[in-house]
Amino acid sequence: MNLFSSFFRHQNSQPFTPFLFLQRRWKKPTISAQTRLEDRVRDTHLDKLVTNMSKLRLILGIHTFMSSRKRGTFISLQLMSRWRNILGLNVPIGSFLRQYPHIFEVFLHPVRKNPCCRITRNMKELILMERDVVRKNELEVVKRVKKLLMMSVNGMLRVHALRMIKRELGLPDDFRDSILGKHSDEFRLVDLEVVELVRENGEFGAVAEVERWREKEYTEKWLSEFETKFAFPINLPTGFKIEKGFREILKNWQRLPYTTPYERKQIIRVRNSGSINRYEKRAVAVLHELLSLTVEKMVPVDHLVHFRRDFAIEVNLRELLLKHPGIFYISTKGKTQTVILREVYRKGNLIEPNPVYAARRNMLELVLLRRRKTKQMINFDDELSKGGNSVVCKVDEGVKREGDWVIPFLENCEEKRSF
Image (tube, rainbow, N blue to C red; front, top):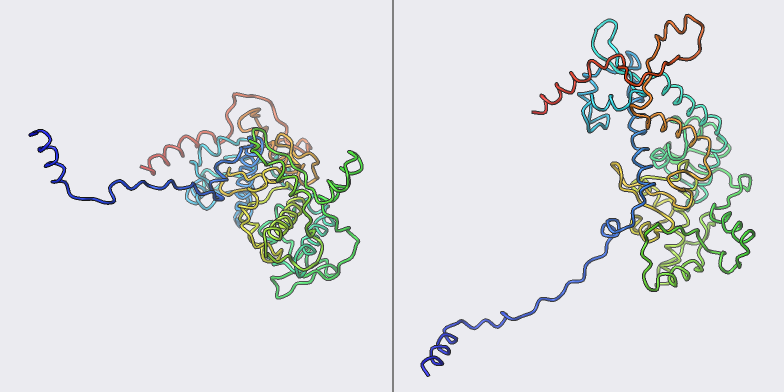
């Protein structure tokens, strides 16, 4: 009895807590664009391509900075080290220059005797070749801009939006004067920052790229018109997990009607789930055609935001792109996220290359050489005196280039400065 009485006495001494045994509810994990981006199936070939393209853009940006210098098309290594963040470099100058001996040449200034850097002659020739190809494809560029204006709701676009993707569209740097101003019969500048389509005719054939694919599928593969009338090419990535009911949902979405990008009809009003699906499918069609008009079939996701109002795309772009992994792929390599049209690439290479892409690919191959096949350059002045038109090279894998002596010195200085 003493044992039981002591037990009940101990229980009565504890304070009454009514919420002590309440069970916590299980919280359902939120599915957002960020979680979908992290859980997506990675494409190593496309990620590697975006990484290499970002290196090429960095080098071309440095070349543009050097070309704008009034004292010459070179830059001192001291200034380059000081403005490293402006140039977009996140590594020491010495290690960066050592990685690309085919691109950069380090030399001593003849007067000031300070180490300077300039672009090699081979890289300059490839840059000039790309500019020449862009100039020769002027009519193709006019066609691309005209198609973009035809896709807009009111036939107008902001020049700033075109300027953001001028490289992706293959536009020259002075496209405002050389393209928009020159072809006044096609374009008209409104308020200096808005371009308007003057006349719309069937000269260029406003047919979406996906419609050409449908016609090919219908004629060559003998598929029914009901299956291909509103369908998109779907290329699911390797390793994509197909969940239960996914095929049925995709099949119904492929058959869902929508307004094509070049039809100037009333925009679908979102009132129910069916109209939401048709509205999103039209947005997919617009983004698909926009990517098809670019040179490399890829655009930074942040740059697409500038076209939302003109193309009447009032949805979360990143969420929409991640919803269709068989059509689009978002790569997070580099400083920005890049969306790529999946169907046009195979193992990181464009299936149907264009002249501008081929010219840029040549520059990319020179960048990817890094320190391989390093060659000892014969004096350019001596070669010119012999009447040669190009630099003669002797293969020597172990030779040091002119100016290599200063690179370890710069690295030591930067390490001391960081401490």
